Length: 410
Image 1 (cartoon, one colour):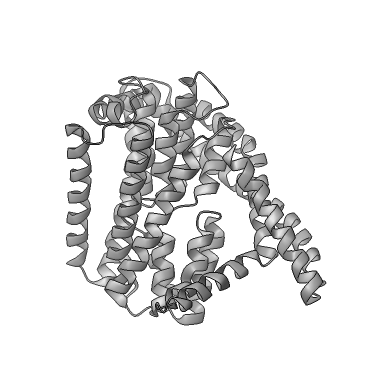
Image 2 (cartoon, rainbow, N blue to C red):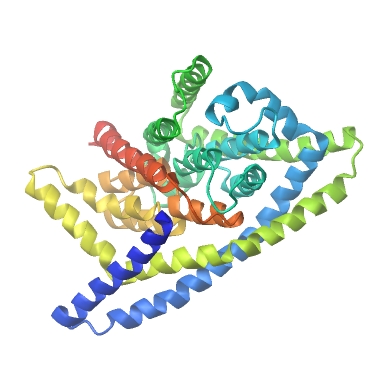
C-alpha cells in the first residue's frame, strides 16, 4: 500500500511542477520532456531486466547446485543461532538462512552481480513460508532492510570511478564509506527489530553485532596500512578470488555428492529466466515514475528548497551540492551513479562535494529498486513497514556520510 501512494505521488508532484512551469514560466518543453522520459525509462527498465537474465541464470544455477549438494543447508545450520533470533519466523535449518547469508556476504564484498540473484532466491524460499502470499512477512522485511542499508566492505566500483576522474588518492573515501554504511545497517537492523519486537539485547545478537563492528574495525585498520595503489589491487583481487571460490566450491561439492551438476545448473538457470521476466512490470512502473519526477524539474526544486533552508539557518550549505546523489540513490542506482560522476566532474574528484557524492553512493542502496525487484519477484503487493525502515536506514547513512565527510575532509 505504501508503494502505491509513493508511486502515485511521483506522478502527481511531477505533473503539478510541470504545470506551474508552463503557466508561470512559459516552459512549453516540459510536458514533451516528461512524455519522452516515460518512453526512455520504460525502455531502460526492459533493458535492465534483460541484462539481469544472464546473471540470474548463472547464479540461480550455481545456487541450485549448492542446494542439491547440501551446502546451502549446511550454511543454514551454522547460522541458525543468529538467524533464529534475527529471523525468528524462519524455521531452524531452513535453506532460506543459507541464501540470506550468501546474499549479504556478496553485498558486503561489492559483488552486485552475484548479490541480486542470491537475494531473489532467498525471497522465493521465504515466500514458501508465507501464509499470505501478497503480504510481506517479517523475515522478508528484515532481509530487505539489510539489503537497502547497503553494507559494503569493499566499494571497488566507487574507487575505480574516482581513479578515472583523476583523484589524487582514489581510496581516501574508503574508511568514511565503510563507517557510513555500517551506521546505516545498524540503524536499519535496530529500527526493524523494534518494529517486529525482536529482542536486540539477546546475548547472541549482541555478540554478533559487536563482532561485526570489530570485524569492520580490523578491515579498516588492515586497509589503512596499505598504499592507495595496493588497496585497489587487494580489494579487487580479494573479491574476484572469493567469487570464483564460490563457483568452483559449489561445483566440486556437487561432484563429491555425486549429483548431476550440469542438470542441476540448468534447472536453476531456467528459474533465473522466468524471474527476470516476472520483474519487468515492477521495474517499468517505478523507473517511469522516477524518470517523470526528474524530467519535470521537481528534483531541482527540492534541492533549491533545501539549499535555501540551510542557508537561512546560517549553516554551511556546501553539502547540498552533493545531495542529488543522496536523493537519487534510493530511487535509481544508475541515476545516482550518473549524479556522482557529474558532481565529481563539475566540482572535482578531490573536492568536498566530489568526495561527499562518493560517500552518498557507497553508504546506502537503491531502496525502491530493491523493493520493486525483490517483492515483485514473489508478487508481494503489501510491503507493511519495509519502506519506512528502509528509508530510515537510508537517512541514517546520508546523515552519517555528511558528518564523516566534514570530519575527514571538511
